[in-house]
Image 1 (cartoon, rainbow, N blue to C red):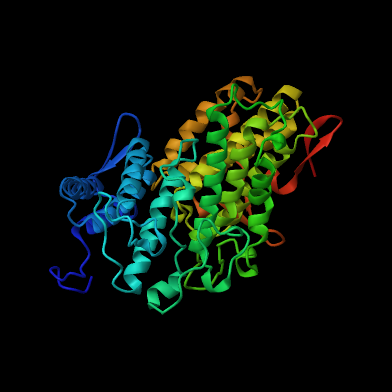
Image 2: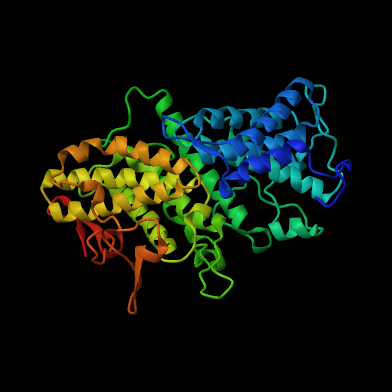
Amino acid sequence: MRLPPKDPGFPHSAILHAICASASRWSPQNVITLPDGSRRDQFAEFHANKTRQYIDKTMASGEDIFFVMQACILLSWYFYQEGRWVEVWIFAAFQTRVAVPLRLNYPGTFSTHGNNSPGAYLPPPKDLRDLESRRRTWWMTILFDRIASVGGWIHAIDERDLGTELPLRIQDFESEAAIPSNPQDISTPDLFTRHSPQYTDSFLLLIKAVMLFGRVTDFNVRGNLRAPTAPSKNQNPYFLEGFEKLDKLISSDFLQSLPQIFKNNTGLGVTDAPEGTRLDTDLYMVHIIPHAATITLHNPYIDFTNPQSVSTKRCVDAARRILSAYYALSATSLDISRLHPFVTICWYLAAVVQIQLCKYFIELGDTERESAVWGDINVLRFAMMEYGHRSPIGVRQERLLQGLMREIVRMTAHKQPLEVGVPLYPFSHQTLFQKNEHSGPVPLSSTGHTFVPSSHQQSLSSNGGHWSLSG
């Protein structure tokens, strides 16, 4: 940015416009609320449209294609945090289709063979910084494709076509140190269980966590593609080819294999020092994405009436861990809106499990345990809504969740179930928590009494042929 605008090293205008659009969430201007409740920031829309103009121009001419692709990645994340799903899906596809003819999916992001094929190929990387920039551009494209597809859509690029090695650590990239290329790529057999210190940081672990979730998406999509019937709680998924191996990887092996410095640090880096608290958003996501993936894999097989159901235990445990991570973050002064927008999807998946558990307790007539679960559901709802103050994706996910809750809202005996366990001032850290000298910050309920989340004080166990929460 210190270079003159006409210098070849100065950022492309499309990138600058995309940065402005994406950064608008931190300084909204002239925000318009539409009839459907969504928002439009005029400043952000101006820069998003300018970026699109460069994209359209590049699609016609191929001019500055690599830089415009980088701008497209930034713009895609803007659409994602806004919850604009059609544009998310279209731009995810655009990135991957552009990246392939650029040969970014080849080792070293360059190929000397096959150049008789049509396409706009890049020359070899001119230096280490150029090489690493290409790697990171490629992997950000793949990450976005995987995240955009978690609802059960086919990925734009198959894992078998990913030849690019993983990036270097951010500190090595920024220092431009002459570090050998990362020895791991997606085909490395122990990719998800071996993390060499010299090639591991939070971002690299985030790539692995998202790619692991991508494998769950692949398993579900391919399993359902030609299946005569939908998955059922009456079948044992462990008889499905590849299920047990994938389950073990996402439910235990990946997180257990993390180096101690990452395993024992959930990304909060909490301190009461004057400079404030720190939040490693990538590492925070690394610790909850595998649990969201576990829910996605096992949810079709949940059966609360079967005390031997491994899928039920997996899902409830995963939801509890996502909740626990949220409570740990909420007990600090850290701003949850700084988290990666994909966190709202993880909260949503945890809430889906809690909704099913709530229905089970309603049918049993167990109002005490039902109330505890309502508390967890509402905490997740308000987390989404708080996140939605800056990024509409939070509000959109909470509305989607309310659609799933209609049945239990109709079934429950609670007069105001959506207020069970809800803090009096849910969006204020100053009023949301009271300090307890023995146990630290504790959420307050709407009645002014301390509200201890069920996920902290209880666990799921089978008793007399039924699932129950036990202390």
